[in-house]
Length: 555
Image (cartoon, rainbow, N blue to C red; front, side, top):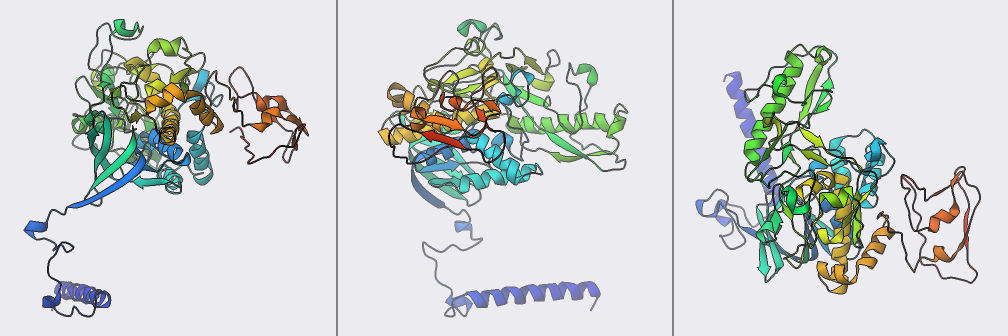
């Protein structure tokens, strides 16, 4: 017997014996021959048979709150709803959480800590800060893949919260003006999943479920006249900010050539219009394509082109001779999932616009904030538009702007909320509110409000009409900052106490009860001791009964 035939025979024999041994050890002893196997019934499927090749699995669940979309907004919404007592499900159509901030896309959680170009001056607070602090602790190597699992751990350990990954919400089943159930499909288990819930929060970005429910939405750019927006185009059109694909590189320590793939699209610096290559470790955000009709519909077409443009830019880096410092660099990772900036924006009882941001409109129903970034509107058409720069950094902010609660529930679907880039804002306003950390703040507010809907047996609009002060107090107690809204919790006994400290190096103990738990750019609200193990003494004129002690530490 030839050596090759002997090896093939040995492998097949070994495989047969191994499989046979496994089967005999694990099958009930009464099934000893082929004819003894059970007859087909409703619980038995034959593999490979024509009439049973399409496996039909259906599972149905009932929840208080269903959060659709597991990006940062959805994560914060789901955790918040669960913490406040609502039986919650988080439905995510990918294998990982995080959306644009996941290992699939590589967008950092940017936000207010870039305020006035002073890194670290201000930060988003609440759950989005909690999860980033955990990442600092568990992921010191700053690995994107480990970050995925920091988020996964954060969600799966949360009581009252069920996570469904690889699950796409396909369609809403309606009962009048309310969503009765969401029809979903879980790719990994080939299962149709039906989710019944009282409140639905669409945090998926594109908002397929909300759109299928008939929720009113906009796509494209408003004309200048509608909201008197300085930076809007003269006439409305369908253009949205585009999708991008990112890369990261690494240094091999020796020269490595680069041979571009067949789908590469050549980078022409003469037509780049300020789309310049300034660093080589990661990027390029300006490798971007939009749409003036339906960006969701052209996702696959644009993904293929984006890969071509990205590899074209890297080919220029490696082979143009303009970047000798790139000789040892290789592509270490290239995204296959485009990161999306804009598609549908669902309409609420209020549409936040450019003037609200630039003139710092105060809202009595404020639940979140932004301002660390500029009005950062990416040009229509993306890289194909060589007549305009990649982005217009229209205007930076002098202070934080407010986001009202009326922007995060649907104006025409009674039990629908949203959080993330799909909230009720104009195209220009979205250029500032779309930052991931801001989306997280809005998500936490939506989840908290959804739990209140269950508690008070009301709708999201009902929370606006009767419970806004309580919603704000809950957010503030959960470490969320709201501009111009100090805490006023009557149950907070610290406000009635005399406070003394063993030492002070910054701030004042009196500031601990001024209603603000975070510093602002122009005002401090903290007390800091001169070292570890300080004494902080609270005393009352009369005995008080304490149920818990809450301490918020600046991060």
